[in-house]
Length: 393
Image 1 (spheres, rainbow, N blue to C red):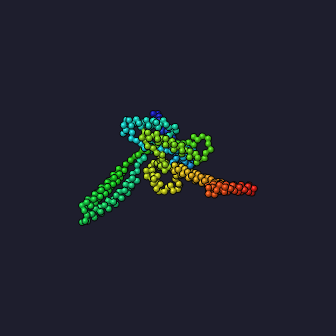
Image 2 (cartoon, rainbow, N blue to C red):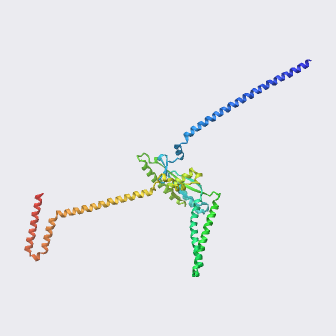
Image 3 (cartoon, rainbow, N blue to C red):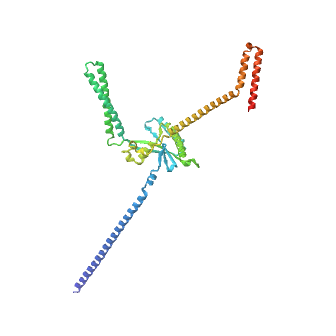
């Protein structure tokens, strides 16, 4: 009996302990679920707050001013990129690459020496920029097709002429041979043009044809002028002169290495920047299409700098020539007036002297006494006239 009671007591304790453990487990599970719900609510609130902050920051960040700051240039004018409100000017020289690997050893040494000379002559900072572009053969294909259409028209005309000559009973053998030659020539040219178009389209189909362009970027800072009172136009003028001088110096030194360079125009600079900022879109819609579409009708492209300099010089030459001509004409007129005035003032003297000379020349005919008396009379009359003019004054 005692053993049975002890056994039941043990079972009861075990059941109580199990129930207690189960209660603890339920409480723990409940608290864990509450904690997860609270954490989820906090995370949701945090996401909502972050979203609001992002919207606020987006409205502050993506505005017109920040776009221009990102692009890092103000405008393109006179073959220059103007940056930082006119404190920095950039000119770009495009360089034509050379096939260094196919050169002989002597040619390679010459290229290296020329490049060393280019580096040694640099007295200002430059940046070498490489731009890889996909070649768009669409424009070339369209040009080929337009030319082939002209060839096809000529080929059709030659074909009609050939058929008429061959069908004419009056045509000689020489005429038939000439017609056949012209017809065959136009036919071969037309077929060759069609083959070029077919092969070019096939080559460009689903294939990227890449081309590398090399540029040397030359900067100029307005602070290089030091303390000055120049206005913006004067600073821009001096910046262009300095950049153009630097660019020509670089082009000359690079020519020793066989590298041909040229200064990019304003439109070409726009194309360079457009491709740099719109690499994907530029392959579909380039600057050339934008120009043909009339995008530049909203602004006027500045005239080439050298053309403006030549116009100014021509106007200056014309003005100075007119001034010089007017001055010389005035001088001649003044000299003539002075000469006339002198003749007016010495009119009596000239008349008297000429009268005495005439009397002297005819002295033999008149007689010496008559001639002397006549000359004396002329002198007395001249003296009387002088006295009368003096008294009148």
